[in-house]
Image (cartoon, rainbow, N blue to C red; front, side, top):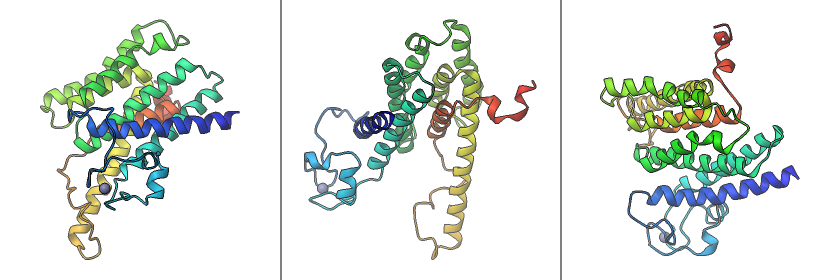
Length: 275
Ligand SMILES: [Zn+2]
């Protein structure tokens, strides 16, 4: 029964992921979200068999059926990630023994918003206000949706402001050079959603991953410059120490990991229990 539910959750997830691809692509362009999808190169409206999440990409071998131009890896990746996250959330609730529809759907909606935010930030280096606001409002409303949680609101509200305040100051003092205001708003929602201890853990995970990815990209760009014949890829050459890597996707990764595995500061900082 659980296996079947997990498969179904995955299928719902990849379908939502497919929609998120369209959403991220059209958001801010003035194009309707509901219009039919078309090939970006030849403009032909896609048929039903080209719109099946993940499978279409595999069967078409990542190319448009008529003009053979390459399709972006973003499409199947976003579908796969969303499907995996949807199934993982159901699994988490199932092992805790509390699969309630309202809770499951609430977390799925939050996940869909977070995936869109991360992809949009990777593409455009900005966290769109409409998605950020939706995340903040839903996270704020979490105790009303999940009644099991403490009705006492003060720690919940304080967590959001406590987590985002240091980053707000950094944003203010560096005039947005070190951290964007979109990230500050994201952190407000993260604090509401995870609480202060989970929120700090998510920020630490995000910073570690960001540092690893940032250093790897800088190293790669140095290698490309030094050995241009070995590393021909122009992909890495744009990343120097000054180039801007968006922070949002790393924060969102940290948030999802902290949420799925119930990580809090007490799990990752050994001495934090003593304080
Ligand atoms: Zn085409």
